[in-house]
Image (cartoon, rainbow, N blue to C red; front, side, top):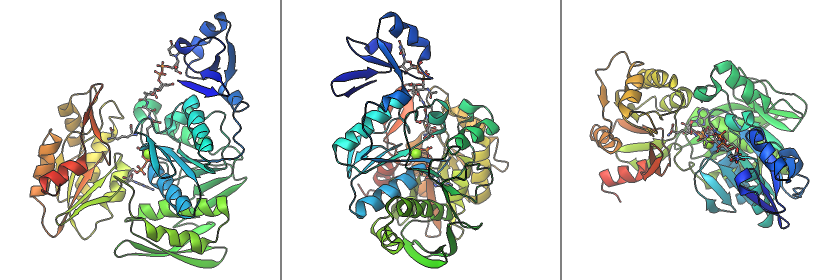
Length: 427
Ligand SMILES: CC(=O)N[C@H]1[C@@H](OP(=O)(O)OP(=O)(O)OC[C@H]2O[C@@H](n3ccc(=O)[nH]c3=O)[C@H](O)[C@@H]2O)O[C@H](CO)[C@@H](O)[C@@H]1O[C@H](C)C(=O)N[C@@H](C)C(=O)N[C@H](CCC(=O)O)C(=O)O
Ligand SMILES: Nc1ncnc2c1ncn2[C@@H]1O[C@H](COP(=O)(O)OP(=O)(O)OP(=O)(O)O)[C@@H](O)[C@H]1O
Ligand SMILES: N[C@H](CCC[C@H](N)C(=O)O)C(=O)O
Ligand SMILES: [Mg+2]
């Protein structure tokens, strides 16, 4: 990938080196360093890249955690835009500058040069804030090297990506590494495994004492939440659902408060202006009630499933291929715990056989009497929706607002939301 700063070309790929370009060496490409060296090219590391790009006009905000990064990042982005700031957002759903989508879905956290290129574009567009999701891969691969964070935010640490990190202990270690320096940070202290450097830290919580502490909430047409900050109570309303979203909203409010020092009352007020984040607990139809969500980990699923205690849940989901296979039975188990009916189907099979992935999920479900297996996701959606009635909620999990299904290395257009609307004849 290339980055051009003041007519100089920086690249992290030796095959892109041309006259006068600079090779940016990192943990990912150090095996190619000799190629650049032998070609007589200047070599710098990603940390030195910051000497070439003046980032003093922009505040970089990094969000890590197993679940909730996209929701929290998007909420902060929406609040800041509502308050009149110019803002850029980089994450799973793509790259956005001041309300416009500039790039589509790709990695949650790009590689070093990608981050710098986006920050450069944000600065050129006058942004004061650059909000980015920080994945565990990015921390481990040092994709965020060279970035100074005005605020680091932690949502929660449960489990994901053990295909890559191998053990849960290693995954937790990597996630906590992000919080180990003295950068300002905002931490969910209800999380039992989080470890952080307490210098310059702020906390939020529902259970333990913290700087931004929820003391009361109720759900009706969304939520009403009271929280305490420095002994004063503040209230906000939001159209979002689920206790997990109270955490995401507290992280978002706290972050904007720390970063802008605006009145908490004014920050709270902005939340009334927007609903759910695309593909995250998104209500696609009210009658029958059909909701699309991106839950693709056992914890993410549990958080969503337990948010509908008064409904008969019809849960439809699969699991991604070439990703942590040990999470699959756990996803089956949690679906069984909360659902009246389950439809197990395909997610993104990638290079795996969809039937094999489904078998892995089924090993976690003891009682299969209410389970339908349908490998074709469109057919599965039809079956799930045909079971719906006025007491039920159909929860379509795993793909959120993804616009494709990935089979081998090809991406085929596919949207849960569009398929649901077609089935209901609403499109
Ligand atoms: C497993 C994984 O994370 N792989 C990433 C890794 O791939 P890799 O080490 O195989 O890369 P590579 O092709 O060998 O190249 C390594 C480096 O050498 C350089 N190179 C390569 C060839 C050459 O001749 N000369 C040369 O200099 C390349 O420019 C690159 O910088 O480094 C590449 C770039 O440095 C990433 O694009 C790639 O992400 C792949 C595509 C991927 O799918 N990653 C997923 C799993 C991922 O990162 N997901 C996370 C988490 C998602 C979430 O929870 O939201 C994400 O952040 O998206
Ligand atoms: N704070 C939270 N705690 C637990 N589960 C959550 C939380 N926030 C969201 N979820 C669940 O996890 C799903 C993914 O949420 P979101 O996209 O915000 O997370 P993410 O961390 O960005 O995920 P990814 O790593 O895949 O990009 C949601 O659709 C919801 O089901
Ligand atoms: N960012 C996550 C998203 C997973 C979404 C799910 N649909 C899947 O494909 O497993 C990943 O790449 O692991
Ligand atoms: Mg995300």
